[in-house]
Image (cartoon, rainbow, N blue to C red; front, side, top):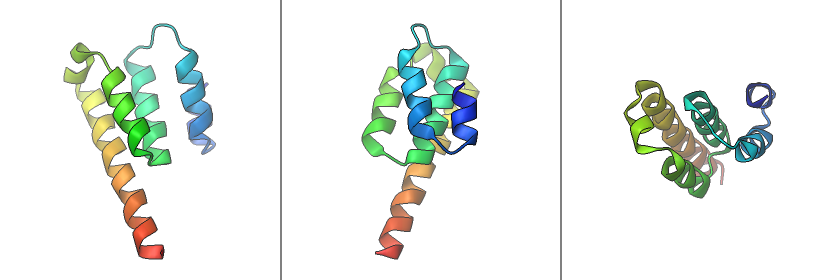
Length: 84
């Protein structure tokens, strides 16, 4: 379900679906990072990072998604600076 919201460019709905999960897995966290990247919201990105269990932070796919999340946030911020 999260994938559909991310594809349809509705990351807020993807985050809401994630928050309803009782036992998120690697894929759930990857999708959450993707939604955060689309939103470019720093506090949500920080909160997401803190939610990920330490053992999953060693996962290469999670690490890649975290990089994408932080880069997406910086890209959004840069875009706003340029256009203001």
